[in-house]
Image 1 (cartoon, helix red, strand yellow):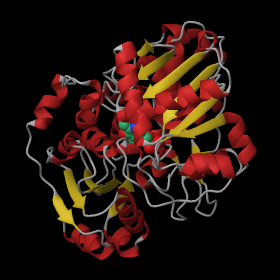
Image 2 (cartoon, helix red, strand yellow):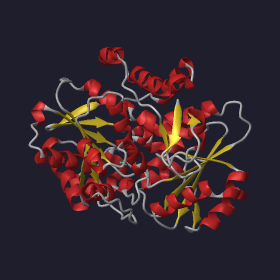
Image 3 (cartoon, protein in one colour):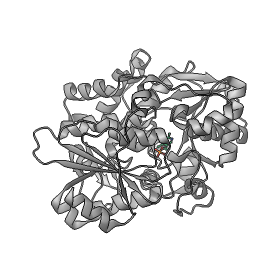
Length: 435
Ligand SMILES: *Cc1c(COP(=O)(O)O)cnc(C)c1O
């Protein structure tokens, strides 16, 4: 598998280098040269595949000979010991991506990446330092995905007071090779510190740095799996296929575009934003204007400068008309999101997390705008997190408690360990060098 940088200055790399480096030196993002349609045999066999069998074939198709079949199979078997069921809610279908250990879809990417990096680092005597900026769910997924992976240390930067208690507990209580740094600032500050670290000469001479955000190609590849798996579960596969994707950094949606290039018959993708509507504004106006992020109740989508935008532009050659042909875009504020959670709970006795509610609203708006008959189409909403992670938002709206799954209880009882820090690069750099 050969990859290039979207800035087209840094040299091409193989999968191992792209995964271990994370970011090319020219500050672009790695993209695979070829995303070809999958062979006919895959589609014939898809109805009989388990999640892991299907994931193996998709990964093999994308990755090629970069890893042996046996190793790839092992990575996938170990990463995915949970399901991604498609459930019917009213007129729509929801693919539940929160059955992993941290109860959010990021487990799909992080668990694959952790094991893939571990594989590539076997026999390597240099320790790798992974830096992650998180607005909530990335941190927990990466922490769990890399916990106790040999040869890797993980530093997680998160904005103080802007992640939920459960999210915070999920990446501050693990210890071992995981360290959390609590930044007195926003998610964008955290992301800027990480980006600066990757571009810093001294740090790169002294340490082997790598990223685990959705900018790492190792997270995008596995996020395409569940698009196929959702399609596998629909009854009538000949109907138009729509996916609504609650979006922040647009890794999830970009992975869906990869799936489409591999031949998944997606009629249209729907990008659903919260009030951080950078992409929706771009879709309307043709102008991409990053902003400071604003805080919302769907905080994992509070992103003012979506990092995968460069990949989307690369896929569409910077042509807005091509973007509009394949992607619709809508944005919703907190009030609309809250009302949606309340209404769906009342009508269908189904509890949405705030992010999934934004996706639900996106699907509703798209269906209304285009006079779509949901009985004659497959309208799938990606459910990106379990509502219990956002209990303080959801519970007052639905008027009852969301039950805590057992796999969360241990984490909640753990002790928070984190290092407080100002959003200042010099401080962060010194700390990294002396750690
Ligand atoms: C990260 C996250 C999103 C946004 O996904 P992107 O790939 O950044 O667009 C949505 N919902 C939840 C719960 C998340 O954790």
